[in-house]
Image (cartoon, rainbow over all chains, first blue to last red; front, side, top):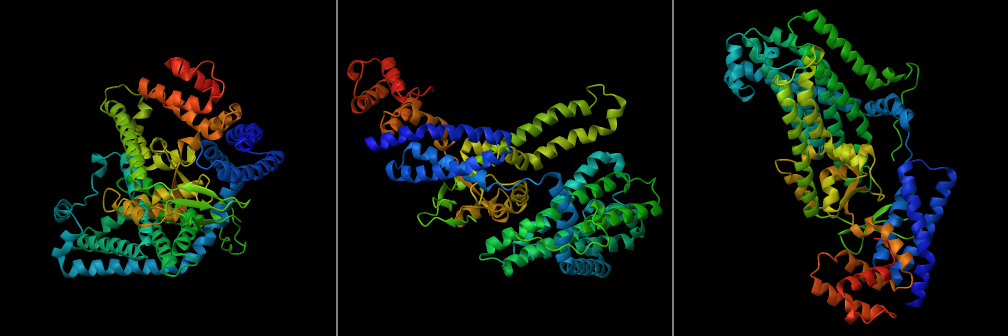
Length: 331
Length: 250
């Protein structure tokens, strides 16, 4: 045990020094080349000491302390570089467009599913009007039967600011839910998209029966173009997640799912930002009778064009003649 | 590249291959610690949101005279912060506290990536977005079930983000002090030093008679040159002697 004691005495000062330097480096965040090289050397020497401590002093606090020190050095050395603003710009300019490009076919399928579901909803309520109680509340039904939309005078009840916060939060939650539901082998996503399409078609059919479909379209058009597009993109991302589990691209399904999710993270972030804009339009413009149909169409189409520019990277400076961005390498 | 492998010894430990041939072993936190941490955080979120509403509602009700230009923003001021607290508490706090939240800190757990380090912003956002699925159908049943049936006790959000929850042992967290103690008390056997530090840490919680008995037994074993026989030492003298042997400043 004397040898062990002597060894601890020899090494303890170095451990304390490494610990103190680690705390300082964590506070600063950035390392010079010398500090980085010194950290690598400390990592090696701590590994040696830890191996000895595990053998000589198993279960002691000194070994636990060395384990923690080694873990911190490992995390410091394995830390990914921070790209800062340039990396963020690269993500919007090339990363997101590359991922969206791989999703094009899925987006088309999801749009088809959504449209078919909406048509099915329209047909269902046109054929069996009583079934509207499945998709609309009693209050909504009564209002429409009296010739009024539930969105009429909504500004008298809730201020635009509160309404828009609620709307975009809810829309982000629905889209993220549609994406995450892809975990159930894609079935959850398909179900959510189909349900949303069915409800939209059914509500339009019901309002059409009472001569209010035009006014509902007027309400929806400014925000709906982007909102529905983003929900479909979310559905495509959910389907991609489901596919990563059905046909894994990595050794295990979990790894495949994790890598797919990492790849899909940036487009989800962009979708959330787009939904914030759609929520603001839905809160401030859609319910306001001051805006005529033409203005609403222009606002809706402009925002949709902006969305396309963002998804293709052109909004962030990607040139038109630039080659189609390649899919980024998997980490 | 270092890769993570499951420990062959036990499912409750996660092993990360080091670049030196020495592996890192991280004890995996179970569903109990996870739930405990979540409940604490949930209450913190609730209290923060309620505190904000308690301030904002009287303002909105006209209890205070506000400048005219603030009027249209009142809706944002009422609804915005509580929603931000609800949605952003976990991602923001986990990012700022390098994989921890106040609840996780109290429960002694930490979120790490598969390299054993603090997760990045993307991973934190993903693991928190998946709370929508993990919380289904209510009370986090899906997430909790996952932590029972998966080898590394992870919920779906952790699978998606490539993270896991590990036990952040207090001893390891205070490694600096432990290693400093090792340095100062180099003359003492490391295992004995362990006992001394543990006894001093629990000194106030232990009954005076009981701690005296333990301290005397310990000093008889480890102290070759006591200033006086341990049996004759008072409670304060015992503590003083143990502190001297430890050599630290704690």
